Amino acid sequence: MFFGTRVRWWLMALEISVASGATSARAQSSYRNLDAGFPVRVEDATATERYSLDLDFLNLRYDELSNLRTRFQYEPQVSYGILPRTEAWVRLPIFYRERDAAPRAGVAGVGAGAMYQFNLETQHLPSFALGSEVFLPTGPHALPASFSLRGMATRSFSPGRVHLNGSIATYSVRAGPTLIITCPPQPVPGFPCGGSPLPPLDGPCAIGPGAGLAAAFSCAAQPAELPQRSAVLAAPGDIEKHNHWFLGMGMDKAFPLSSTLLLADFFAEKFEGIGRETDLTAEVGARHQLTPQAVIGGALGRHFRGAGFSTFITLGMTISHALQL
Image 1 (cartoon, rainbow, N blue to C red):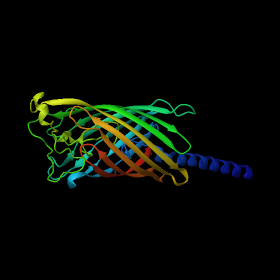
Image 2 (image 1 turned 180 degrees about the vertical axis):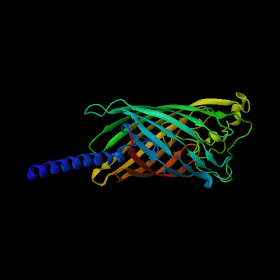
Image 3 (image 1 turned 45 degrees about the vertical axis):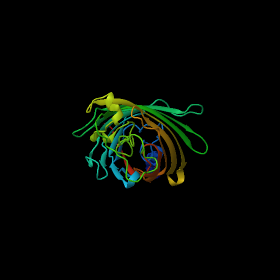
Image 4 (image 1 turned 90 degrees about the vertical axis):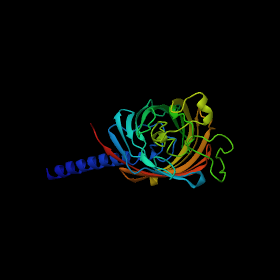
């Protein structure tokens, strides 16, 4: 009888150990789940697991812009696996800009969105997902809300995974008799001197989908103004709405024994209606599973075509908890 009792205790201990190991294994795969901006712009077609609460409270971005301008962005985000293959999130971009920017610092707005993963990847079919977000700018000169719709596809190969992203969004600008950006004293490569200066849509203070799925324009806290030639069609102070599109491709390589993911992406985006050329950006980064619940990541990027060149760094950490509501 004593022997039978010991056998039962050993079986129970083995069952608990296996269950704990399975939970730990699931948690330690979080480093493979890519979200836009954490740390690169292109993401995979994978939603947050159901009942998983992801806290992104340490996400920072530093931009070195043209003409020795610098910008910082802090963007806390909370996402939750609300339904099977469905996640919802809320984010709050906070910016700090160069000295001549007004306002120089503040909360850009609030973004809220959701993503649905249609299928798991199979031998013959990639995984597909669709997401959408609404971004509500804040501040005394806040512009109307922007909306976005984004599609994602992920396909696995022997060397790694390939991700394709595409989105269409809205944004607003305010017509004005004066321009916000003027040409610097010394011409900077990529800066449109000699022509009409463009609104400040470079860097994190404008191309806000550094996270989530939106074309969130943090510069909405400051009235972005159209070039003078647009004043013929719009009176000063009038708000014009235009479209923004985004196309990107990314690749990653996982090293499961070290719980590390290396990744790179390249994307193009276009702000229509303001005479701005297509922006091109490339990034390289990594994600590492620090603990079963914590993932750290970072990336280095270069915006090498558009209204101005810039180099930027992103750093962040995600803490995951199981929470059944």
